[in-house]
Length: 399
Ligand code: HSE
Image (cartoon, rainbow, N blue to C red; front, side, top):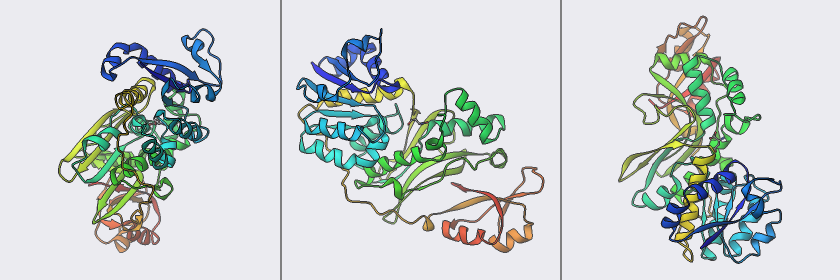
């Protein structure tokens, strides 16, 4: 029997207990033995809940119990999750985590400790919720050099952009509705400013290239400036606006960013709508592959965490090699990232053409302004040119 301790009985923690209970038999078969939840750690009491009998408030009870093989860290935040994880690994226990913030910041260090102690630090649920992406990158796509990972990595913003598209509403109105329905946090900053997607692409890029990608180095732009008018223009082009977390290797340099992109219907992520996430990966041998599913929510996220528990149980006494060195990967400058830009301005065509040369105009019947698409430009070229004209907004394009 494998004994598990769950740190945090919130949405994901209670989901982990539910998944382990609902699929007890099939999970036991796959793990090769029974998985028993011996402890749940939480500061709160849960009177009447079945976990009442196994609830502890002191982490040392778990740490000092040699019968606990696997710790499930679903507390979120950096502290004390970092200290708890490190102590568990040092004590020879494997850890399964959904904590993207912790993985992005301390992943390489925690993986090194796990390797030294011959245990495992697994974090399938930290990116894409229930979608398998960490294990595929680490164990399935090992024959390939990864040339690109582009994902819709945040369900809240994808829901907001999809609703804006379907209902023609502005960002603020949809955000308010999303908050009322519980699809967006009361403080939505981490989602709408792109910080959540930034941590997730930092984890994927670190795994893809085997070195530390610091999320502080990733250019990050959220969706707060996207308006109903931008979406009208996108519709005229048969396009959609999506928040991408992307990393690409071009001529040996890795570019990494989070930003809204205008994409056409030939893009594999075009039909990823609502709260769903999608992750597109290109390998130099495999070509394109796609992962799609629920990127958040109690049971999808818990399903990914429990898959790590099963993996840890199957590999007891063996470290699953994961290449993520602490050596920092220097990212290519955003100045050199090139794409076409869609832009809006109230300036006349003559001014637009004086600044940008030949452009393609887009007419969305909006009074007092024009939409246009530039030729392929580097970000630096675009920024330099736009200093000479007042733009209402600009969005990078993939087509
Ligand atoms: N707020 C995140 C999202 C939760 O909307 O995708 C999952 O990380």
